[in-house]
Length: 210
Image (tube, rainbow, N blue to C red; front, top):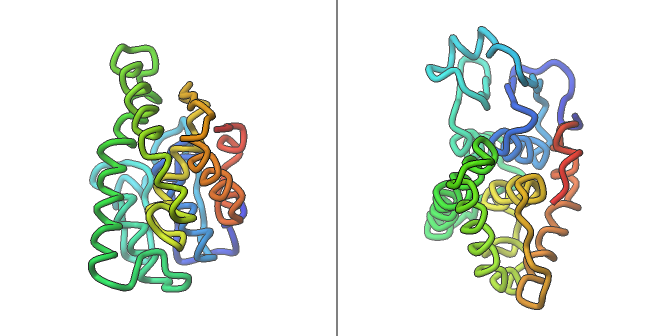
C-alpha cells in the first residue's frame, strides 16, 4: 500500500476489506504519515492488539504507548497530531457540526452497510439496502452546493463517506442516474480521483467498484 513506508513508531492494524479501517487509511494518506500498516484478514488478531485493545477489534492504531480502537477517535487524533493539512474546521461551531455529521453517518449509513455486508441474505439487509439508497438519493442535490460534504474543503466527514460509496456496488446498491443524483455522482468522482483515496486502497478494495 502507498501509505506504508519505512519502519515507524506508529503501527496501524487494518482489515483490508473494512470500511472503518479504510477511513483511517485515507486520513493517513492525506497526512502523508509514516506508518507501518499490518493487514489482518482471516487470521487471528495479533497478540499485541489483544493486549492493547480490550475488545481485540480492528482497526487498532498504536503510536508508541498509545493504543486507539475507535476509528473516529483515531481520525481526530491523527488530525491533531499531524495538523497539516487540517481535516476539521478551525471554528468550534463548524467543528461540532462536522462531528455531528460523522455521528449521523455512523448511525444511519455505516450501521446499514454493516448489516448488508455481514448479513447480506437477510430481510434486514434488503431493508437496509433500500433505506441506504433512498437516503443517498434524497441528499444528492446537496452536493451541488459545495465540492465536499457541506464544505469547501475535504474533511474527516468525507473520509467517512468515501469508503461507503466505494462499496455500493459490492453491496448491490444501485443508485439511479438522473438529474437529481448527478451531483452525488460528481462528488463520488472527486473523492475517488483524490490521490489520498487512491493511495489508501488495499488490494482487496481495488477490486471493488462503486
